[in-house]
Length: 272
Image 1 (tube, one colour):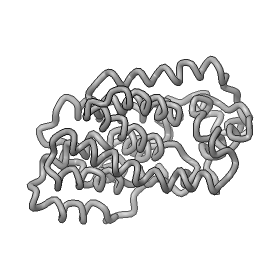
Image 2 (cartoon, rainbow, N blue to C red; image 1 turned 120 degrees about the vertical axis):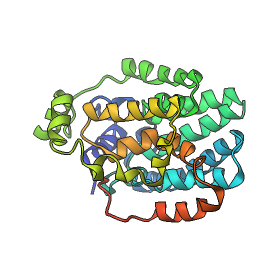
Image 3 (cartoon, rainbow, N blue to C red; image 1 turned 30 degrees about the vertical axis):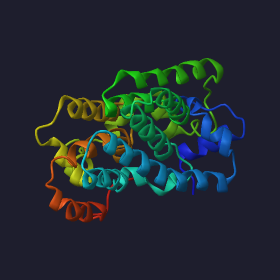
Image 4 (tube, rainbow, N blue to C red; image 1 turned 60 degrees about the vertical axis):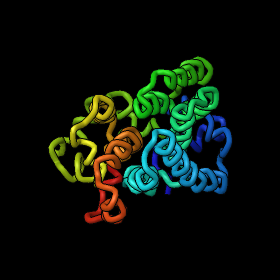
């Protein structure tokens, strides 16, 4: 079963014009088109790419081995990274995160030409990835990736497609702030929506750095203009919070922390 986002990527893959911001996410629809096997290959390949990129980032940042091994565990176990079934495999969040994580690692290693190439690719997967990657790395160079959605916006003009034309989705498209608040009415202080899904990554809030504060503020700001919650939060801020969290726990506790983090103690609200 395809969700509305996935349906728009399939439409784009068939050559149809789609609504903003889906028109900016051109790379995967162009490569995978309407072939399920291609989407599944990208989805499965994204996991080891993301894990490798995150671990490489931790290594280059000077973290101890146990900590840079724990980093991808904390990120990839987040419910929002796994995502609801309607975005598996036709989605851009996980692939975008994977490529951006490798870009951050390359920048940390001093391989800035590779980092620039990768962030351009990540921006072609999802237009907001340069912003998140720049916050994770705390380096403005990765914002260069924003040139991709800027150029694409002139080439691939948005259009209200047949999916977005459905009344509920059209209301979300035309009135993003109003529908975001309506969707979360009574849930803004609901811990099961807003806090608990972070699991062990909440340790990042212990003596938080400016970087952690900035990425949290930016991630939660999305909720004022979008109806999704956990998926947006985790794919935006997950790597930065996990990077901070693995440095808080004593090394001898990391294995236990990871074990507690990867299991669900309450079914997460990944569809929200």
